[in-house]
Structures are given as structure tokens and as C-alpha cells.
Amino acid sequence: MPTTAPTRPTVSLVLPATPAAPAAARRALVGGGLDPDLEHTVSLLVSELVTNAFTHARPLRGIAVQAFLNRDYARVEVRDTGQGFEPQAAGFRAGLGLRLVDKLTRTWGVENGHYTCVWFEVDRRSGRFVRAEEPVATT
Image (cartoon, rainbow, N blue to C red; front, side, top):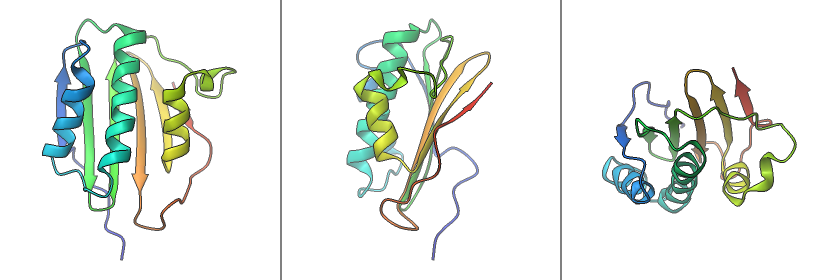
């Protein structure tokens, strides 16, 4: 029987925008209760998103990471002060990182506003590779 997704973040931190940020994000998720069965996939994906935030946004206030974790489920949000992007725009799949996010998650999206939030969900509760529709963008 599936469990519900947490309504409050299990892990919430702000990382300095340095090359060490991806490793710090991975350690925080594992230490915060990331399901060992999801560890490889979620660690890879959070590394990609934190690296993208550091590389493309160059955030002055750091990179915020929030994770909502349960058994067989993880939703991770990575926020930065960059200008954002539209995932449906031509060429968004140009980088390997977003291609991995697209292929290895149930769903993912981008929220653009005062900050950019790229989020993803890995959900093994209802089937190993159940996919939602296309990436979601909100402005």
C-alpha cells in the first residue's frame, strides 16, 4: 500500500555556491533518511541539479536544497537566483544532466519567478518506472 508524500521537507539546507556543493547535498540527503534503494539515482540527480545551479546561475546567496523523503519516494527541489529556463524550449536537453533527470524520474519541472526551482520526483511506490507526463514549467 503506497504511503503519502511528506508535506514538510525532511531535509532543508542552503549550500555555498562552490564546487563542493554537490557532494554536500548528497551527504545531506543520505543523512536525512534517503531510502537506500533510491540513493544511487537521487544522489546522481541532485548532483546534476546542484552542479547546474552553480555553473549556470552563479548564485550569490547560495543554493537551496529541500527534500521530501519517504520509503520508495523522494522529491528534491534545488533553488537558485538564476533567471531560469523553459524545459520545453528547443535545446533544453542539450546537457546530459537534464537528460538524466528526464529519464530517471517519475516527473520533474521548473518553477521560474524570483528564483529558479528545478525539482524532481523518484517514486517507486506504484511501479518501478511509472512516468508522469512531460516536464512541468510554471512562471
